Amino acid sequence: MPKEVLIIEDERAIREELADFLHEEGFSCVLAATGEEGIDRVDGRDFEAILLDVRLPDMTGIEVLERLRKLTPESHVLIMTAHPSIDTVVSALRLGAVDYITKPLILEELLQKIRRLIEFRKQQMEIQWYRHQLQAEYDFSNIIGKSAGMKAAYRLVERVAATDSPVLITGESGTGKELIAGAIHHHGPRKEGRFIPLNCAAIPAALLEAQMFGHVKGAFTGADGRSDGLLVAANGGTLLLDEIGDLPLELQPKLLRAVEQQSFLPVGATEPVNVDTRIIASTNVDLARAVEQGSFRKDLFYRLAVVTIDVPPLRNRQEDIPALVDHFIAKLNRKLKRKIRGVTNDALRRLLRYQWKGNVRELQNVLERAMILEDDDLITSPSLPSNLVEQTHLAETIGPLKDAVRGFEQEYINRILQATSGDKQLAAELLGVSVSSIYRRLPSIEDETSQSRDQPGEPGPT
Image (cartoon, rainbow, N blue to C red):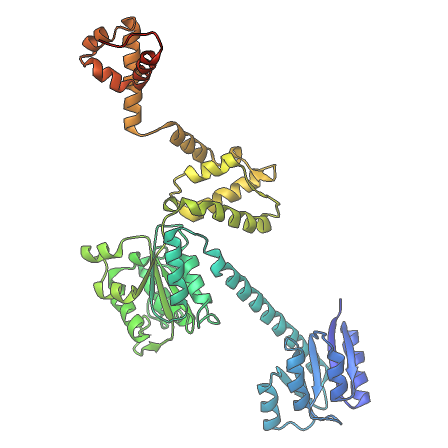
């Protein structure tokens, strides 16, 4: 389908020349001779580009531009003028025009500008789509759970999202700490800025400083140019320092200064760099214990932990598993183009009994694997990993130790009673216990004795 261009130009010769030229280049053109006619031509249409003359018979191009921005904010406007003035151009650009060109028009130059406008528009739409996807990924609705621990975490997330305070998110690997951090960012005042996660454990200590703080040219071998670092890249947004417990001790004072003063020295630099970056940290280790052991600075710990959000492990919130299963199945149906309706009762029972050492991340991976392998529209136990099935089967067959001991005692006493033809006194002597002890250990015997006492015509003990 050809790209549509709206041409608002009062001179008929120019208008038609532009239309013929752009048609040959593969564009579809809509023409208007006045400002009002051009505005009417929009009528809900989304043009790839709008060519707008500054001087029109009924109104100025600036007045038309103001109305166009309200009617079709996604369309990019190129101003055409025979008498360019700084004031006119500045006014047009401030009102949303993307570029301008002077008359007499050079058609090849105009074509280049239109193509740049279209490419710029495409990039903007891609950025908007990507931002929408990120917001959807980190939406509050993705924080699943009605357990007490998740409710407490959710309440904190809602409160700290509206602030700029540092946040420390704690929890085992796979519990969804990055999801929590992303939700805080995308529902706060910095949502238009970038959200950048940095895994402190995934980067060698020698490179981590340059990655975080940036470096100047020649700061070290291989530093052929300047690099701003992620603190600068996240300026106006949020930097998530994942696995902060693995941050080398020698870098911790530098991070402390960056958090407290929003200022730091890039590697090899002599002048500090100022930023406005929110810091969120996450860890799967006990930082308070790390402070006691001397592997983490106390002052940095307290500065990062202004608000601490603890994400409980999945095994401690089994009541959240059914909702998580539904959430992931819906999400994975879109990804895998499947139509899985849910899980069978037996499969769900095994998911509830499993220990989930990998937490929510492991649950998602298990469900994705099952959905790939499943032939039916319900996930069944055979589609689950064999280790999960075996572990849950073992959990079903093994009970508490006291129950196993009681079962062995009862079985052994019954074998002795069979050997003594039911002589309880003899059985008690062989077992080394009293007769009353046998009755206590075998309630069924006492029940039988009680029933026999209650039979009519049978004499009771004397």
